Image (cartoon, rainbow, N blue to C red; front, side):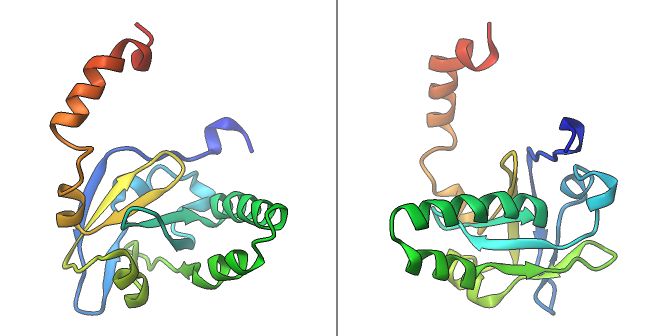
Length: 156
């Protein structure tokens, strides 16, 4: 795939769950996709640190290949099965909404009604805003890391 067709996500946005349990992928993230992939299906998986990871099918293909290889090398077939069993495809409607599966919400500690989407390069992360706000990596810790590593980060 040409480099310009590989989507990457950055920034953040919040959207609300509606009464049907649907939430819209923020337009800023939908617009990151190549036109051929826009309004297609995504795959949700339980991430670490109390969030959900949301991948395009193409991106998920890379991840599941990595998980499979690592599971086979380490004899972790049960992990491979559990990972694949918990991966949930979601279909976007014309407004970019999808049903957020209650079992994944519970597993990630997402209570709603607001859902925080964070762009994390090759995926989106979905968080309960209060859970994300309580993390130590935000605020003063972020500023301190930026101060220490700013030259290396920005190549200055």
